[in-house]
Length: 136
Image (tube, rainbow, N blue to C red; front, side, top):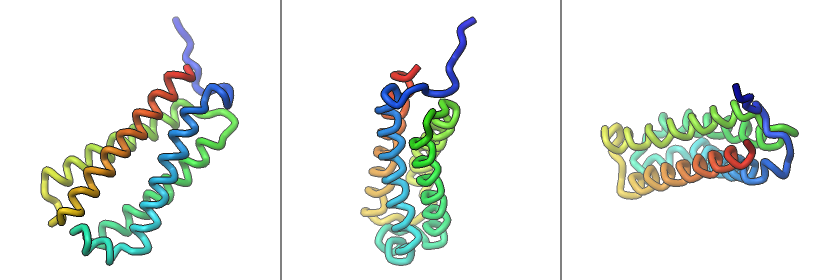
């Protein structure tokens, strides 16, 4: 039976992983703050209701804080990174569902935003996966 390490041991081993987590945190945090602060304005521009953007923004701010905390730990929990990747995959799936189901009357700019965010989040997830592979 092969033992699997549950944490990443050294900072050097986790360089790509920490980078990916921090980039994800910065993007998530910036979007979250904008959604909370300017929900009404952005809602109109994108065709998304402010009542949707406020809690989404709050979630993103908390998620970003968790990502920064995870990336700054002496050892990075592989299980926690797995949860982060699962949340990111759920975000991408929800973005596709939002577009396909027509939940909101998105503007062209709103459609572009949803697609762009899904692509970026998928990219973060790919970097996080690559970082995990390098560490273990």
